[in-house]
Length: 305
Image (cartoon, rainbow, N blue to C red):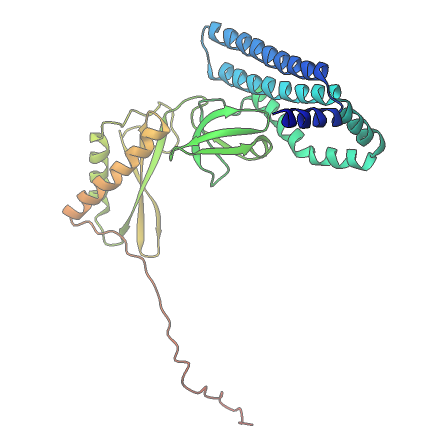
């Protein structure tokens, strides 16, 4: 036991630390923790006192809470380096005498600084908020915004997986926000029929099945592609390569319900078309087969060498 104590004392002396320095480090850690908790409770109290607790306020609360926590860790680390004599002298030597190192550190921190500034812009201009359902990019994954911090935004996907995307990427990418104004969603449900199919009969069956679905809602008064005279609009949107594409416009209360409605309609329309002998389009494939074992016949007029 005495040997281990002497070894610990030797290591502390090598670092230039004594009991006073240890007390300072403990005081710094306690002060950082106390200040972080104090600001956290102040932010939480202000958020709880908000009369609406709107998504914008929840977004600001999450962002500033995460930002305060990060800043307190950084400040505590700097203070600890300053109170340890050996680390303080090393840090002063590196930053005072190595300009190249400062450039390297600045270049390495460029991406982090970009993420922080982008996070501030996201909170300020509110392209999305905590709780919104978004899609980042054209082929991005749909999900609900769960958290926003200084570096990245956390999105909870339908598979219950958390996707972390840097704020700078979200700031530059195209965002599809399904709930920032109105969660009602118009779902496009398409089916491809054969050219000889009874189109009118198919459209009538699709309207009937959509009207029976319990998740369907009445669309807004001002719409783009629907016929205001019909509860459910079905249109022929494409005719090519031996197929007729029918598109049905159905409204649901939110994107998740609309996706579930889409899957239900796929099954219901499939079963109905099979019962009523309405044929689906079959893909046309042309295959060319070449026999490479036969010798190539020279073209007419060319003499063999």
